[in-house]
Image (cartoon, rainbow, N blue to C red):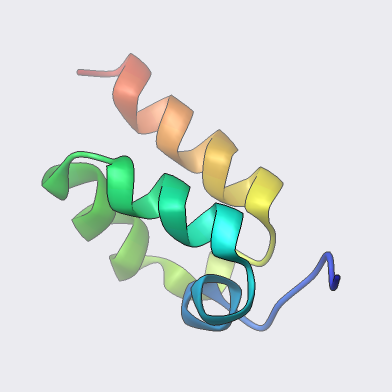
Length: 57
């Protein structure tokens, strides 16, 4: 399994765990993450970014 991807959409296409996690997030979090998709290149970066957004609710 690759640990670094070119962006969010490649990550979601190739990592089922990341896709399931992303799908479980609230819509506003998914929108924010999608807007900066090129910065999300691993499952860890996806989790970190989502956690920061959720913490600031």
